Image 1 (cartoon, rainbow, N blue to C red):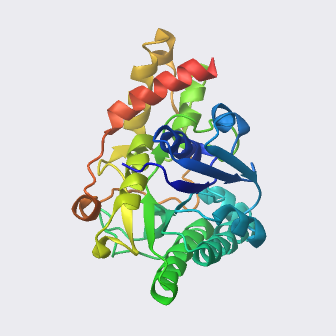
Image 2: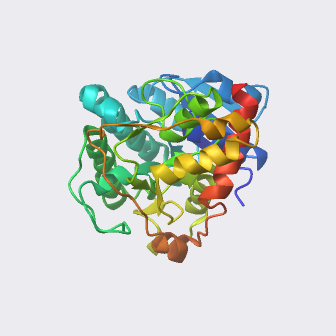
Length: 325
């Protein structure tokens, strides 16, 4: 267990970052949250502001001096800050690159200078690109299909170079479609699960891109927290300076996903079961299928997902029902 350490969480007011803040504060660590609130929300970190072990630094990772300030005397960096979303990167590739590549490099430089013990970062399953191999294995990737995917692959390359050149310990976690509490259902780039949940609660028809047979390895937030902690705890040299799939190893179609959501939400309002699903065109930059091999994480980090899809969806549905009302 990680205890009495100083941990910097960039993007700490975001969905994944705020959950990490909460978890490591409960373990009696000092947590620094660096966020510019471009996609994160103050209400996500509101409960922590009165905690003496929590420090909020409002700033942008594109500012190297802010990064240096945030990393000072830090033990571990959990770098979650990024401009997410494939469609957003297609609309505005320049800003995605500035945040996800230049900002990432700033954090690496600052972490190296501050001599942090380990730099753990949010990588992405989008790195697999046009590879049709299933399940996805860390060493077999294709060509990126979006500017976002390019930025996340460049992150991995930079981390590898900093490990080899400067001796900075790094671990990348390739997140697969993470969902759970605090994930924002609003906005043009909302993730599919919170977006669908909100629509169903409002008795609105969710729109599936394509015929609904595209599949994803949906991963509950507590599994992601678990992987970040295991990445901090890893003490075998062979487990460091590499990347790991962070997923369940379970494949679910969008049609099945909506079926589960309607079933679980109907417990709160039986009319939700009657909501019809609509279908639209496939989204540019989307890959048809995504399924992770988690064997490497099991072997090198001792990972075993705490939550499978159905359990995570039930927890999430309850959270949204209580918080969206």
